[in-house]
Image (cartoon, rainbow, N blue to C red; front, side):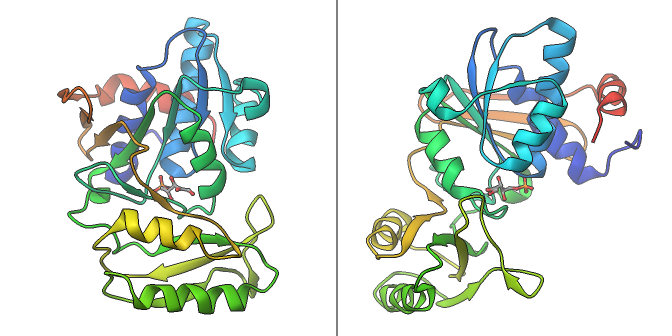
Length: 262
Ligand code: 5RP
């Protein structure tokens, strides 16, 4: 791993590192998916190694499970853990109410199950993820492969009655074939540009037969930790109103990420 991080990786690292400070000994944790969540797994593994922190992690994807295991974090299933103290995950967008779009990494189903089975969900993100209105990032919707084209038509029909600016729906591909989620489902990306009523849209999408889950996380996230390219980091908690500004000592951190494996 290079001794210098790009500004975007510095931002992700800073957010991840601050969020991992929230982890206490003995906690059961939800481990998110994506590049920011991968930094979180590395920082968590560092605390496990250095401090002897004892945690159990429930990964939200096979990618995260592989990384966590490789770095020495104890991995358990959600059925084994049953309920979690804290989930730390990335997001594609978040708004002022901490509503989210997730699923850019196609893991939204396990991510939503794990986050809603947690006392607290903390989102870690770089500053570009904060938006006034959700929807510039295409909204991922996980659908059953059986009859997916009919499901797509029903989604398009539903969007006609919704407060959105765009209505294009595309099947996510991996090469020439449909991308398969960990649950062997497909992802439809909804290019909505701006979502006026995220709660209403989330409910309407989940009523369509064939839709497994959508990437709108409404009233699920409690805390957002935002990292910046210079190592500054801010933490905001919705319920307590806590707002904290700080910065990660990137000179000290450099020793850590230089030691961390990919
Ligand atoms: C995966 C997700 C990710 O959290 C989201 O896509 C953000 O990823 P990254 O941290 O790489 O920007 O929802 O399904």
